[in-house]
Length: 127
Image 1 (cartoon, rainbow, N blue to C red):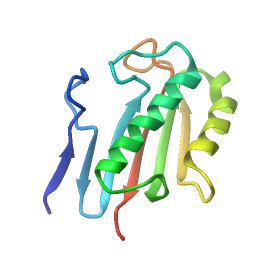
Image 2: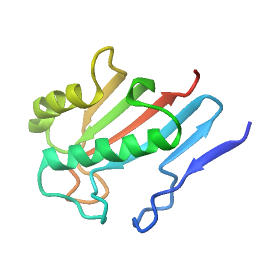
Image 3: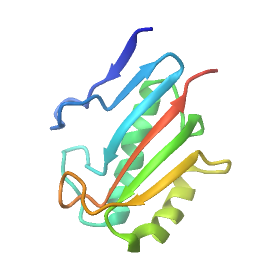
């Protein structure tokens, strides 16, 4: 079964990876950080979360999917104090229920020391 890769948008500096890869009816979305369109990382958790959601939406749109097609997401946070805020923002962005299955982890660090959040996911493209 061929694999379709979704490269980073033009002009965005990225490590060697695909932003997403599709195999069959599954779309695997890499960990998406909260960089803006110019590759800058905002200072606030809320702003980073907003760009994570925007960037995931772009990937889903390109694959012909929506947030309701997500079946599993993993949320990585660098501060436990952001969990409550993340839950409020997440409910608004990924809702309404039912939500995808989710794991939330607080990690010591992400690849860029200023990154406060990264979200990865799996979407079903079966229609």
